[in-house]
Picture: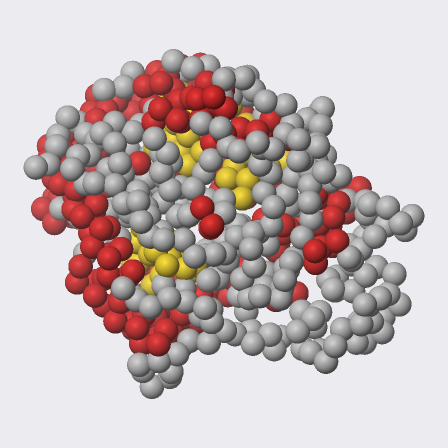
Length: 576
């Protein structure tokens, strides 16, 4: 595969170029795909043959109405049709949820699926991002998340279970307690797009509970579970009023004929679908073991059909990604453009063992230098190097979340502790807190230089920098690395995260009564909508979140047993 194929990553607005684009730019054969998280075992070859035989009819004629297709899906899932809305992919449903049901603010743990941060930002909503810490294995503490929501006065809360990209899982009883504790919010969304791959408990979904509550929506995916991302279809479940409100806005033919054909095929293939999920779970265990054997590679426990891994020290994710693609024809998801992550992390989709062996061999050669090009090294800040951590994320930071790195102090508010590096620059003219960019102050372009500096070349600061001039060069591309480091170490301890003053409570106790703003934060709840583009009071901007990854070693332990799994799509089938 030619080296110029990797230029597609620089030009795409999405996290990765499409498989069609990669195939067009190569010799006509796509790479082994460890990037797109779909089920490699479903549909079966026989199902593909059946679809191929019907191809002409499928693409020639209009599909049935969405109501007809939804009714068939509901008969398989044993759900009332009035509680379900089907969309052209979960992204269409997220878009309508934002337009119809998110009025002013939305809270979401990060890193997570990008549309949960980008979509509300694009429509001017305030997004309160709760950073997951690597030191705790990216686990979501629901008690702390609830206090975070209360402190900011957020009106909509989102939980992805399992979370993308780390695969973190929350047990059903804890999610139900959280839903009930947030009963006064405008909306609680539980995104279960990857839940079919979980085996931590028999019935992990909160779909039944959501239908009984006035402000809860559960989002489910079909493309990921059925291995058919090209057929854009997903669905949400809620009480009839909520589901009907979304359904009334959808076009009559928002579902295509392929989606209809697959939905009507499912009743005859429930056993194969259940077996495919079982095989993915077994492959996940095997793949985790193989990757964990690579020196310096950290693999985090996952309940999705993907694994989140941290590369060894000194390896830059974009370099590893590009070399795996050009030298080994392997496509991986580098996570530098996920808010709350960095280019040291990859998300690797679970695939059959033969593909995993090829991946491990490729990683050994790229990471440890057993190839003619040697080991992967960090990119140099020469002005032409790139990192996907500065593309979409920096656009959101500068355009939507205020003044970017110059606005870190203002974003934190009075009570939020700031990283050391963020406290020095950019003070307002009166000597106090800088005014947010959205309030009319122009944003200075070169980040390390304070506003009042007249323009000297070596960027003189009150505290003179010693000899290493290349390090603090005003290079926008290198923002994610040196940003807000409290110490000169390559990967610092996490910046202080909003947490309760006392030790964390058990979820049941923590949710017994909605807590006011926790003591350390000293931030009053928001009293009204925050203007678009202004960070939450006491909240974190995207730039701050990117600086608080909390990188430290975390053991890849805690794997649940694979003795049982939920019924496949509610069809009552189970594999032995």
